[in-house]
Amino acid sequence: MFKEDIEAVFEQDPAARSYLEVVLTYAGLHAIWSHRIAHGLFKRRFYFLARLISQISRFFTGIEIHPGAKIGRRFFIDHGMGVVIGETCEIGDNVTVYQGVTLGGTGKEKGKRHPTLQDNVLVATGAKVLGSITIGENSKIGAGSVVLKNVPKNSTVVGIPGRVVIQDGVKIPKDLNHSDLPDPVDDRCHAMEMKLQQLKDELNELKKGVHQ
Image (tube, rainbow, N blue to C red):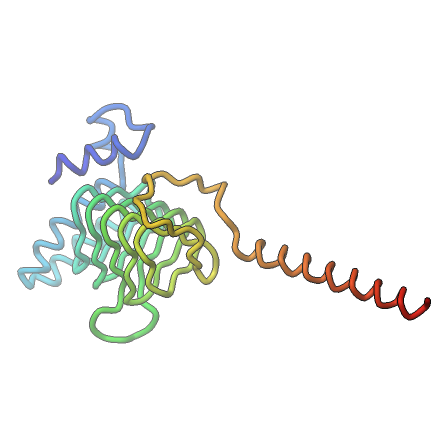
């Protein structure tokens, strides 16, 4: 599994040049490895020791992963500063998250209170995925989005609150151009402008009829 974690870095990060560089300098990789140790201790009920390891990892990497979180294979954290992953998170295989991502809860509720990310999900910079919701496989969460509801598989979500803007029922390639995402708010404003212009034209026609 540790070898797969390294291979995931080379697959996702074109800046990775050598195994030595990746092993020694990638904070996201260090955070994942620390978590795998902490999670093993957590499952054996060594809660204090598990939490201690997670906090030491947080100090050195800037990435906070609760030892109770369940993380699958080939998980990749790109840069990672400010990433927070809650206790009851469940993350599938081949998942990628960017810096500033929060996989958190919405309050003080008990039980399952953090998101589930299925296989091949990508969560872009600064996105917040909150509550006991499920992000379907092959889906993408756009930068800065706030997601509070379940997301179907093969979807792209953007905005605050997050809205599904693409869902074509087929696997989406795991790449995301953060600067070229649909903007549902801008689309709605544009539609309103068109409607207002239509009403103005109709009003002008009525005025012409009255004057005649």
